[in-house]
Image 1 (cartoon, rainbow, N blue to C red):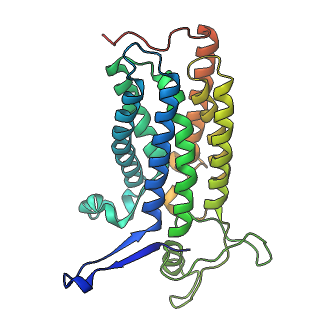
Image 2: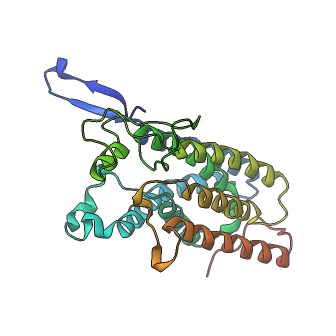
Image 3: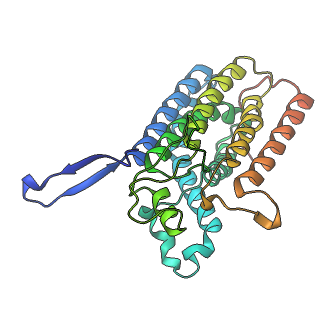
Length: 294
């Protein structure tokens, strides 16, 4: 685990500048940049408009998606953690440097904005979503590696003889949590053994990315690739939630036995079913672009 990938010291310039490049932030940025380029490449491949501007539309959209997803992921985290410091100190909401993002919040924020932006610019949201959604899985692949490096989103404890068990060192988020919950002493050099659930999900997202590319080659209607994601990722996330050990994910939400992400997984799966029913009922789309929204 390397939460700080690079420490930059510019004191030799007599400016007193020192800062850290965190692995988590770098992996998030890398995932976004790679995903954006992948989406732009696909946009160029399917660009059939007379103006040839679909790839530019996708690039513009991905910029706004970055903002919408960061806002959504922060809002959902605050909602889940409201009683753990935010209610007592509302200004903590704006201290984003202290961490606190939830992927599903970012996904929902990105989807809501994309529906609005696509309609505003006269593109079919389902068509656009099929272009973008594989990039989401690839971005998650990088992002979960960043989670592992930061020691967040950790798994449940495992037996000492479990071959995939991992320990996180002092200074990690899980180490601080275990100290606060009296699982380990404050001077313990490492945490107890836990599931590397971040790496499980990272590998799962890479597999999902490849499956979505395959689905895209067999596409029969707009929204088919998006529906594939909404079918498969909720299963992956629901399963990973059963192995999670951090409390930031929320537990027993609304009196149910489900976590926040498990409930959202169920809703997204249902939306995927609706998209398939809609697509199969309407039949194969013959036009890639729709008229601008009235």
